[in-house]
Image (cartoon, rainbow, N blue to C red):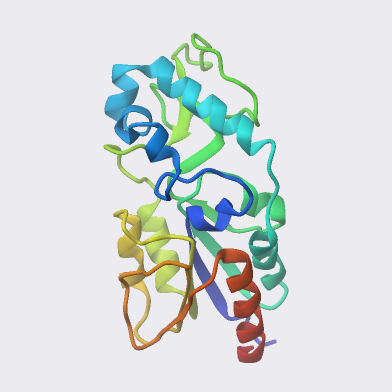
Length: 231
């Protein structure tokens, strides 16, 4: 039996923007409403944890009010013909809700919280508000299960190993500006075809690179046709 080609996709905020998820980097995004270091860094948590908790409560509530878009759904559809793994910088669960089955969340998951003492004590809370003073089973204050600026990215080595096995690499909705995630492309095997979907200019170049200058939903429809022809 012929084995399926391995697709690895690196996804970022741009794929969820069309679902109505606010991004940090775009004009009108969260960085214009909040100082990122106040709400998305470990120093911000230590300085004002209640502000950070409110911020993620708001983000969680918003996530419960939006739906996966066509770009997310196409990823799930690709699993019929390819072995697909998604490595995402997004903390939303829209890939899961669209039906994708193999997802690595580099920066954590919005619908989960964890102990401030034991990072492995993780609790799925869905979209509900976490009240200040609400404790983990070990008695510590619950915090968002998010990898903040100033913290290590625990799954980066796992992600690098996955990228190294790719037959096809997709990059959708990420500017490749944030490290260490931006360095993952360098783990791909030489001459692996890379498809990049982004309406904006992206600095990454390469002879094996195909750029689709479209937003995620349009770009993923175009890419699906290209991949069907490859398979």
